[in-house]
Image (cartoon, rainbow, N blue to C red; front, side, top):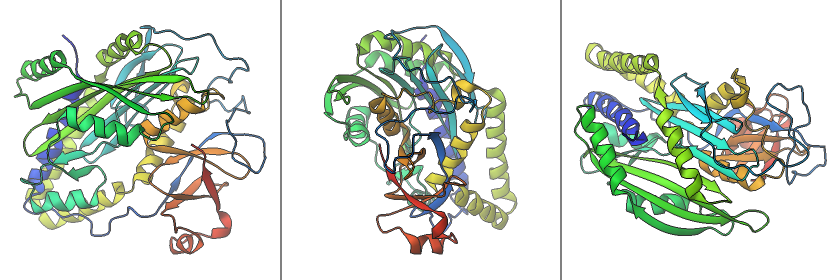
Length: 419
């Protein structure tokens, strides 16, 4: 039987729903939302010669960094699909493992927000012409406004990973999602949107096999295309799932992008999803954490509220979450994960941009040409080249705002978004 990522998303959403149900009578959110400006640490990607301008493309210049193989001078032969998979574990929380293509450039990590774990997998072919991905770390959990209680409303107003929105089934949700997520790619064109009745039936059966009542399920295959820097057409596929449980609902995606034939790589993507395994220890930890929160609610409302506010403040900033996962990836022992950005081909600017769209990141460059990965939530970025810490804000963010954050403007320089 086919294994479905949608079931995993539904189970984590159910856990979050139980948490909020417990909070309904007494919990509150932090009154000071931290979505406007944030300081965090950027992830350095590659070094380029000092030119005073952002480079059109970047290359690895230090082969002793220990972050992956040196990028070859000549492009490798065209990469076809493969089902030769190697198992990689999540280096951030050890929440899961998955089989990824052997010899490809692979990035695997988890992003945890409250009771929800987002599992994100990116794989780039050796020739840089194909990207496979599973998960989007920025898709929120959705709550039906008609049934939301005041606490749920307060949470949704303050937290990036929760949103008040009436259910939008996949045939409606996914075209809007793809247009918003990828619509700025050069030559973007939205293609066909096809309902996948077989996949819907398979996912419903997966719920039944676990003794669970299946929510309302909708799955679509959405095709779109865009152009690379040479004007070559790149074909892409999104497999999008939505599930409606009444009070709350969820959306999840996986897909691929290639200059070749999408159909030839789809079995490879399916093979990857079938190998994904949740770490039982992680599940136990999350369940224990959930029960601890509920116990706090019952035992001491005031204490729980204080703790809850502290927890929410810690995860409100998208850039802070970006810092956490990027730092973990950077320090991971598995070089196939840690060296992901450094091993991107110098000529793969289009695929690098596509990955930035998937992961909601920006690549920024200092005046010396050094590039960093940052969260894409901001209009302007100021970076401390010595520490790697960056501050982000709106279009008016500048020296005065840096001082308000307790930072010395002379230690920072404004960096430019290059893709």
